[in-house]
Length: 272
Image (cartoon, rainbow, N blue to C red; front, side):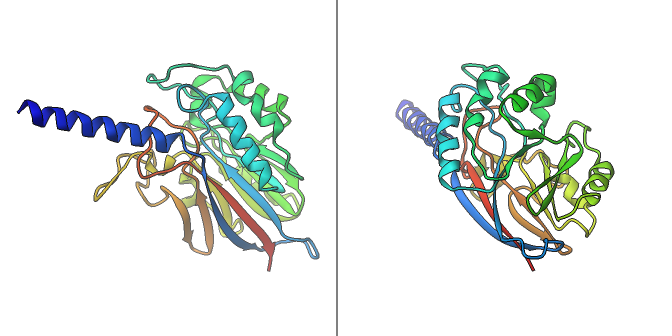
């Protein structure tokens, strides 16, 4: 019995080490090409890069790791960077907390041609939304709270967090509609996709971590979505609309990932 217990302990420690290694691995670069209605005539294609759920905090996401990821992003030469919220960690299993200015300082080095746009996530609202807004502005990042802005050929809408009831989809869509260009909606939570009208055909989000812990034969332990696995991960197409959900970069609750590697999305966009 003692020998079996020792074997079980060794296997458990091995699994935890594997899950921590997956959580701290360089993010996988995933790619998607889409055509968007409303693309300005003669405008060339552009490349957007989606990052979500950075969750800066020890042990798995110190600012130094975020700086390495920023260098990886810049090497991909995106035209636009989209940040889908949840910027710092507040998990009880963390080994170190960072203030927003320290945590987000590496984002100052992002160098997309057309700019970087962000929305807040549920952890930002729970932690300190005012500090998050201030640190994002200091990093030269455009924060959209239920608002919209033109970046090149795009009218980008930024939906505040739906998980904490800060989202106002009608107001955000109305502000997008006033702007010229193809429409793209950035959200932390993917759930508003179910209510997205046909006029906006592309939405990007994070929040779910693609489950973070995904067990063989069982699937994700949790997605934090009212729709379960429907909008949990990757590319979802419904009713002529496309949703991209990133697994994110950091972790929540525990500094572990299993079957849901950190990722970033490069989305090539062009007109029809």
